[in-house]
Length: 113
Image 1: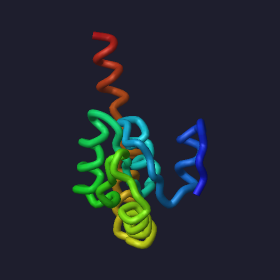
Image 2: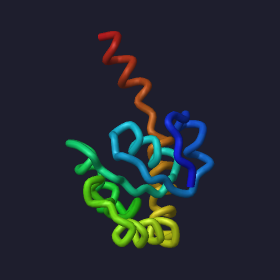
Image 3: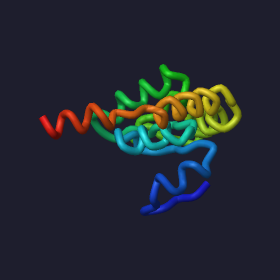
């Protein structure tokens, strides 16, 4: 485990098995893009939605609201994230799909038109 204040996700996520994060849309997308199993600890608004999506897609366990964290309820979630290889497999598959998406032509046409 490594706690940091700031780190470039596109550099570190490809090196990781899994991440535990706040569940912002950018962090969630980048984690999935690089095939990281994820557990979200939501704080506000959309993070709760991303938490449910990650869980429903099998990319990680359902996270715990930041205000409800305890050793008793967090430890089993971390163990599940780390030992359930299904999450990692799904994240890698989904990440490959994301990395293979290309909307270059559509974006060009949208900007030029």
